[in-house]
Image 1 (tube, rainbow, N blue to C red):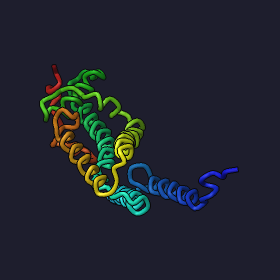
Image 2: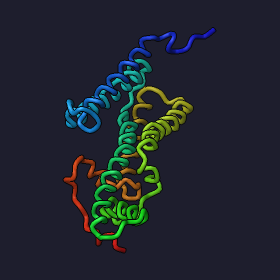
Image 3: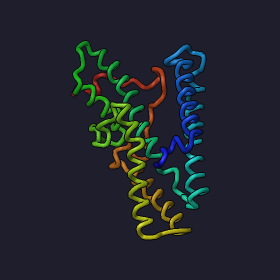
Image 4: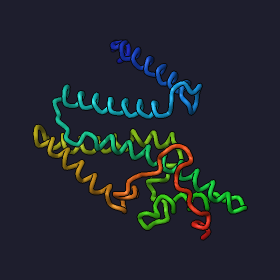
Length: 219
């Protein structure tokens, strides 16, 4: 009878348990959700550090163990970052829009709020509509799922095409670099739905963001 992965590797289960306890402890001690022992800036730095650790571990796995040199490794992490950035920008913009429309005297309808968010986000590229890829930007759980699903799907398609064609060695490395360049050129276009080379902005905390006028969405 074949034992499970965790039965054969108990250290992995211990590591996951320690990571879960560490995450819960940081959350309870943070300023946003806990006692305020840990500052928000420290949590941000810790999050960035852990993300870079994931990149390093993934690179160690694919190059150190599988022997595949990927020159476009960050493309997959960038896509995951875009998914989270979309939710952050949507949530921050929604806060600004709701506060601005509240100054008009009448309660804003959901349609007005959505239109205001779309105008605020995509006005810089000459649009006032949310692209289809922003359909789930209002939901953190869905965007977290997409942060895993979108890069995973790209890796699955690219890996299947590359290995099915038996591309190996330096040729595979060049293909990974070409894929990253093609992805960058696409994302820099305004038609990508990610604000082109303007990127995602307004992700800061607090109320220091630029507040638009309610009349901007009167129509």
